[in-house]
Length: 127
Image (tube, rainbow, N blue to C red; front, top):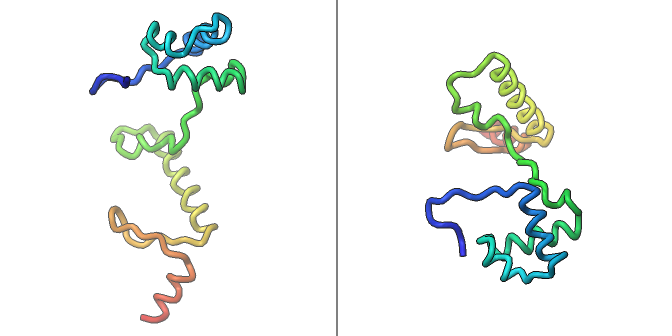
């Protein structure tokens, strides 16, 4: 059973997860029983138990978020000087990596197209 529509995802602390895992491992309660008592899905409980068995307490710690940490800065209108420089630096690093791999960007916005440098050279020489 999932969360109610429109409800927020629940984030559990390491201590809460450890308490649930210990109910399974030390007290030998079934996952179904623990789920009924706590209201936590069986899938989550199973995942926590497996992670605890594989990695110990570190398996219950939240994973670090991946992705672009500055994505929110793009839409922010009030940037500090430092945030603006960090964003510019990140854009330049991304562009540098793209150029190392041999890609150029043609167009912008929705019409953005990634073209290999060799394709760009052959297209421009034909015109």
